[in-house]
Image 1 (cartoon, rainbow, N blue to C red):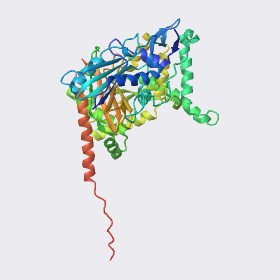
Image 2: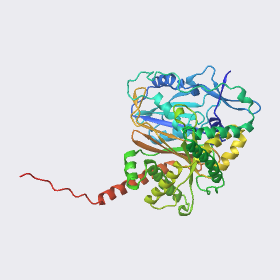
Image 3: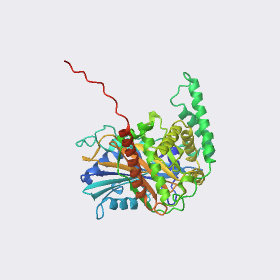
Length: 481
């Protein structure tokens, strides 16, 4: 059977599964009206399966080193992936949280395409749809392409509204590349890095820009080495021995317009505000678990999208990683926001994302054992994964039913990262989610509640400062005689 080459970055993510920490993304959407399972099935059959990746399984192939490849699934059956279940009594958010925790704790079947969907009835009078997929299929940005194809902007859209049949190329059939020595990995990765760094620069017409881009790649490699030499994050309740059991939680939605107003007062962006509120929540959570928060460090591993514009509609993984120092040792919200803004601004100009993206290219071409060593070394420098994805801004529909809320959980693979925090926006609202090892973080809902409390504190401070601001004097009205 024909196999298709998997990109080195995707292969790196496929191998990132640990015995307890799985590289699986979980997403949820909630509807106030019930979903019709047969109609949902028809949508996924017609639209999701137009992406080859969702009809392909992963196989290890090649000599002398077997590497992951995509293989079309013979006799593919969508009913192996779509499940119709009902929520247990009392049919509330707590019951849904328990269900998602159970599902998130279960590995995917590696003999099948790596995704599952559950349509859940009786969720507070409506429905939930839970989708899980392995990270080797796509990153968060790429999944926005899938969302754009699955869901509609009007309730009565036809089943085939987009006209195209395949938004994800199958890839190149595997051939001589199977025999390429592993020692070529570094040379090829360096070539890819230079191509990536100069993708938007014409070397002939802008030679200095090309040189500067190349310097950024080389500087990123040096910075990455510096990151690897950093001391590890100290032991905390977020680090330790893992089990397969996961616990999940999600916050109440917060308004993007409020985050924008808070940020405007401090010269900060929406993301700065949301991350600062998350940092305040983690400070309170760790303090409640007897951590000396005034004298500790807490780093988050943050993905940064480096996808070239010409590959905007493709699946796969096109991001690098950076380490962000979270200001948990700052007691005041305004100070935390200022430090968060400074840290986020530094990341925007850092070559580190490209350097780690190159590292993924290298790791995807070496045996899993070597990749595990690198992941453990880099992962020890942080305590959690943090992602922030901008989702759809308008109301979307699934099988004719309006989607009320949408949020997701990123994985936290490896042996050191005991928790992942994700922020996803939809319809002008942002939701923060937490997934963590059930032993290390048995109460993730505490963190999401603290996030809402912290955000409300920042919002009230804005209102108070606005009320104190002196009113502008109005010009006297001219009354004609």
